[in-house]
Amino acid sequence: MGRFFKSSIGRKYAMALSAFFLMFFLLQHFAINILSVFSPDAFNEASHFMGTFWAVQYVLQPILIFGVVYHFVMGFILEAKNRGARVKKYAKNNGAANSSWMSRNMIYSGLAILAFLVLHFIDFWIPEINTKYIQGDMSGLLGDGDGFRYYEELVHKFVNPLRVGAYVVAFIFLSLHLMHGFSSAFQSAGATSMRKEKLQLFGKAYAILIPLGFIFIALFHHFNH
Image 1: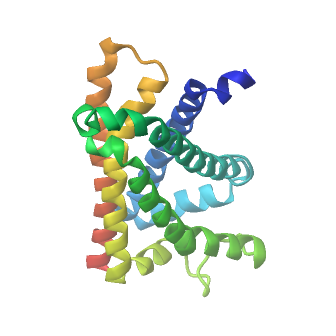
Image 2: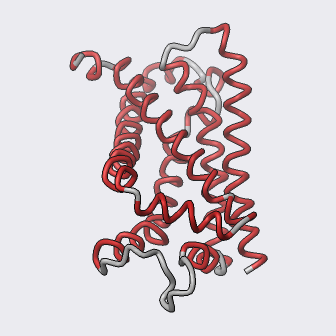
Image 3: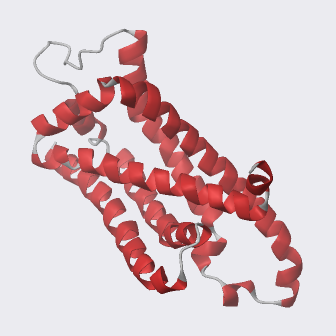
């Protein structure tokens, strides 16, 4: 098993598994955040549950952080190996004729997404950790105790047009990244050619609708704050 995950195929398979996990998390994250558009109370309740339930905080959250770090590190490793392997091939063949622009530039969309994650962690995750585990406030309440703070914090972050613009650009890059990454993950996991067309259709829908949904959330709160 150890030799398998050290091989090129094994690394790609592990990369695909981490991609599936992160795509599932992204869907779950969107499901909670879209509640903020329709019901601030429902969003507050869901956010408080996710922010205080022990299994989420002490089991799923560490797994998520590991998954993010692993996916990016493995992505950079595979990209470096692929670029090295393509040097001689590109000297004889036109690489652009055999692959899409996105497949050849996943590293750049990945770097843009990584930069966004740093911003997102600074905006939400680090303040949340500080409030709960440094200050010791697990109540989730506003400073005056009048209701939960999650919705107010979310809306406040989307007042600044520069931050909203950064979010929009980041989710455009995420969409481009998912366009290729989704089908590539299933291919690495061994999906049959019979299912390839359906998976590509589903992947395109996911790659467009989920980032578009996050963009809508950011713009909605920006223009309605």
